[in-house]
Length: 451
Image 1 (cartoon, rainbow, N blue to C red):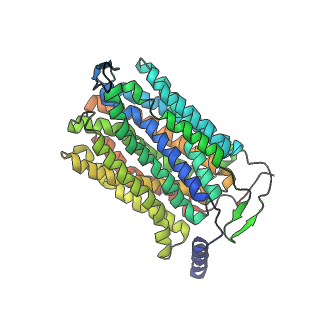
Image 2: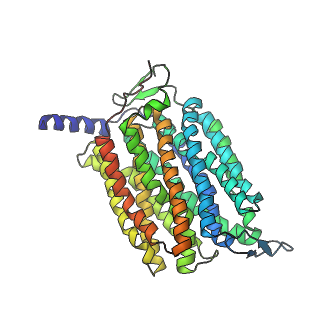
Image 3: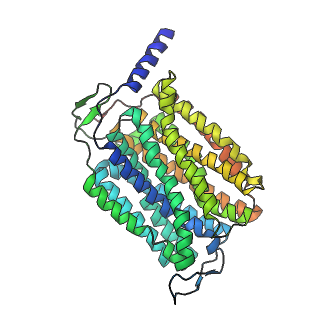
């Protein structure tokens, strides 16, 4: 028995440390994925930054041009209404991602990715036309539909272009775009809102999206051949029909990934949609001062994303197999999140920033690795679809969290229960993943197609 374990470990290490032929241009692809994810998170972050403004009656502007209006009326939101608006986004995200993963698997990344990017960009700019709470709900719904396609497409592109030992690092790099987008938004949105009004703040990312779509369409190509990474040689991909999507739901590995996302994605949504309100209510920060704490949190979370993606390689060098290293990296990140449970009762703004920075960094490291478990367990033909299932689970978890959070904050004005959940969710999720997908065992052989 021990000999078998040693042999398995040796084979895993040999596979993880092998140096197969690499596809040229893969890091350019990673850069494009990074930029798309940054734009994605800029778009979804605008509303949360403007939340303190939208809860008031008017916004007093600092005109950038002579003769520009000095006052703009806002839409009065309470916590329950805001939670309902976030719920609209999350439900649409869950609905959209059901089809987005399959769309990307059918059309491929080159054609499918620009479609979803264009949809979310138009919806993001459409917020500028809103005149009511209901209008925000509609705009967020369509934003969620479009943004649901980003990660299935990005994970699929990563699986196509990167060998297994590099996928977590590549995922960590492009996933750090989530933090970069969340950094850029506090830089740009308050300045635009204070000078040109909150409606103009929803328009600023349209140019970036249009430029990216052109760049992707011109530059991206699917590799002509799939790489047999274990041998370092190119082999032809066998043709055949994909398994029906519902067949993938019969695998425990699928449910391990889905439930892991269901439990932990709401925490990241909580940071994105409620941290500006937390700093405003807890530490009395207004729109002109709220940017710096958010920027610090997301700058450090960017580091966590890249480091978390690299972490499995570090554990492999200590003698672990690649899949053992992946699970150990997830455990490390889950433990680093735990201190955030204390954030709800803090009196110091910068202590809160420190704990949130650690937790957000750990989340991004966790995210890079849990996404990569899909390509560990499934062939590339099914990565987009399985990732989309996980995104559905994460969005549904976020939708439930949004409704609960809105009512808790409206009734108690306390963030304590929300931070307690945030600190414990990852350890529970890791237990679920290890129970349903022990050792990240392969669900299907590479290029497993229907008969």
